[in-house]
Image (tube, rainbow, N blue to C red):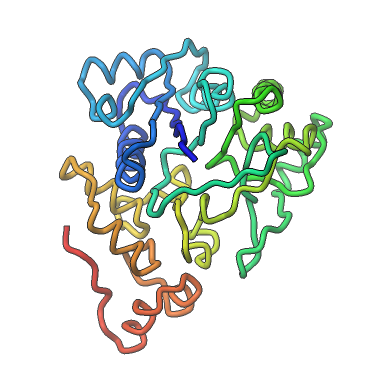
Length: 303
């Protein structure tokens, strides 16, 4: 399947989120050099990219600016994200900027799937389960939303270019606006509100295309896309995850450390530090686990 891959960015200072967008887009280019990359951003960010000749202007095939109202970059980013089905034409795969692509993306949506989204939670074997935070449940009750049978993650999303796919996107944005009025500007609860209202429209995206190893180390096994929670976990003072290292390296060297991405893929270990034999075994990082048992240091490429 030929994919149009979309990122969203509201970062007119072209800071850390722009850096992560460069890293993710570069990792995608390495695996899929022919895929079209679209960057959807607010007008001020688009202007800054052009003015500074930022690397994103060369990594992306097109940059779509949009007039966005919002008091913060986070709110403008979520306005764009929940509007992307309307603003970006064609069938598309959306990726958060805190993702790293390490293997081919081979999606197989069913004939009735107008969107695909992965489970937000899974058990220790990687099987999707229903798990919802109490504050999310309270928001659903307050807004009289229907909870879907499986709560989904909004970090990687596929949209078909169909009337139902567009209707789902419109519903997502409408519910997000209601959520903002209720004091919550996060986009994931509204995505699930739309999924609860249009349950037949949303298929299940396999977790290997939205693997969150910080949550479940087992998801590193066979992952095609690592998804890190940069908003909550990015740590450049003591880099632990692959993304921590990549951002630190990019800020210091101005380039993506592709050798370390390849090392993490080969070893099934998206971390820069040891996290114990149990974590390594769950991730399928058997060579890392063996070195730990033998008391040998973790051997990684030197940037």
